[in-house]
Image (tube, rainbow, N blue to C red; front, side, top):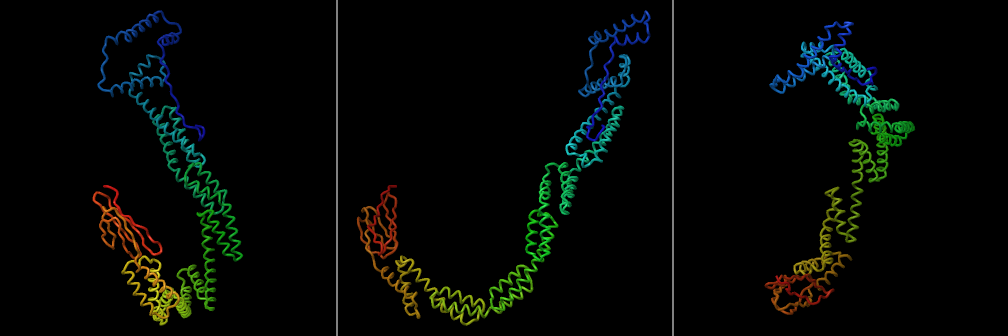
Length: 519
């Protein structure tokens, strides 16, 4: 092998063809210069004897059967080894070949096996070599690959010298070296990625490019390659943002510096230097914002703008959670705000009472009591507002759903509440209006309405919560306004149900209840 990229090839050893008998005779004649008169007859006799052995004798002698297939295989191997050995040794004459075969068949077979073993190792060696060369191994592991190929070349020389044991050992050594290179591909790839990462951190695009190109040769298509290539692609823009952030910080514009660094980290979230700069500038900007928030809070507190002060101090606490300064300021706001807040709630409660917004008044007084559970105005206001709020809710429900008054129990309860409400002072326009509306609704609810029911003299009719009417053709009822259900039953027929609504505003016609569908 003349170069690192040239594949190791086994040296072929083709056996020489055995010499023909005629050739042997000619050689003998040529060796003597001029054949004596007895030579020709002697050669003819030898040829005749050979013909008898080859063509006649095998037919008369039965060939022995092998004891097992292994014996047959061994014999075939021995024969092949004999032929190969004779050919490899370049025996000049047929007589000499037969002598060699008879003399050392076992050693020749071993020699043939050793040669094949060496060739098998060489084939595997060539496969690994090809796989490594596909990954440009000579670029990223030149020295190690060169040492392996040199070892393989030594094996070639030993093979040519028929030192098959030594050749195999050299090939195995070369194979082990190449397999070690192949096994080290992941580490080699990772090393180049690390080189690229450090180069990107240092802003060295050229070095990063070289490392990533080499990594692509080692492991083409490796998933870890694309993210690093993306980081390299964003490096110029990231470096520009870092420079811009530094300029903004120098001018005292920490907000712009922080925003610029956020853009930088967005370009490459894995860039450690950009992340470190962002953390540092963000901390400085946070401290600046905290001090500004505390200043704003105390300024608002001095002017009794408690909500503004609280928001400012809360902003400070958000910027630096757990800050003792912010916590102390919040306590100051709470203490200063209590009196003003209670006064505001008292005014609100009184105003809601005057407007008969009893539920809102209840909320105002409860809010005051949540601040100070012993405050007198809130206790008294709550005692006034809560009963009026419940009464207002009940009256409004009856007004919104007048059909509920058709229920005698509901009507009686409502009349009782009306009697109590008439004694309340002050009533106010809202309550007075509710009383007038309920008076009217109760009168209507207590005034029956004529309802006509029709049937077929075969259907048993029941009006729920009213009466069992039996069979009839027409029946007249007086019912209070509300919702009713009539059910008809008849043997051999499906039951029929009729729901109907009665009101003074919408008179109802005859209601027919007849079972018509046979079972």
